[in-house]
Length: 105
Image 1 (spheres, rainbow, N blue to C red):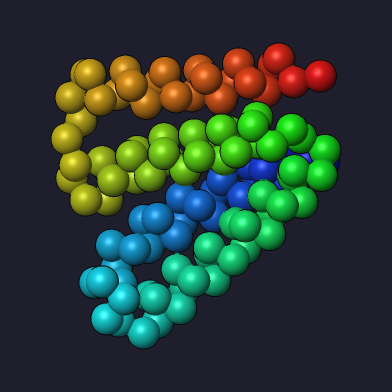
Image 2 (image 1 turned 90 degrees about the horizontal axis):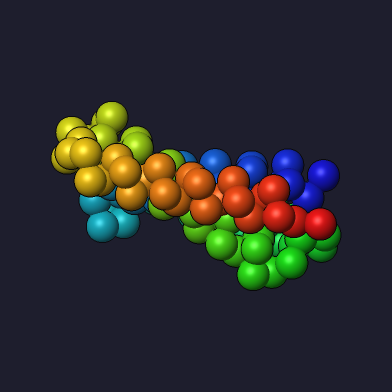
């Protein structure tokens, strides 16, 4: 169950990170509240995941999901660069996350 919690935590990290763009520096109330809620939910699920997953592994996977997911959504939603080097780096993050999952005992 810990890996499921960690995956959900990572998805909420992506959601709040992308949501930051819509807060306009926390000057817009509703987007700011959604971002704060996403942060709280992400941290709660991360804390639940860390009951059974080592903190180093859990934190690395959580930030990896957040980094890769946010970069991908940045490309899709905000027309951020899609060059080969950037995509290759995202794939390296995904490979690292996969490796940590496969090596977890």
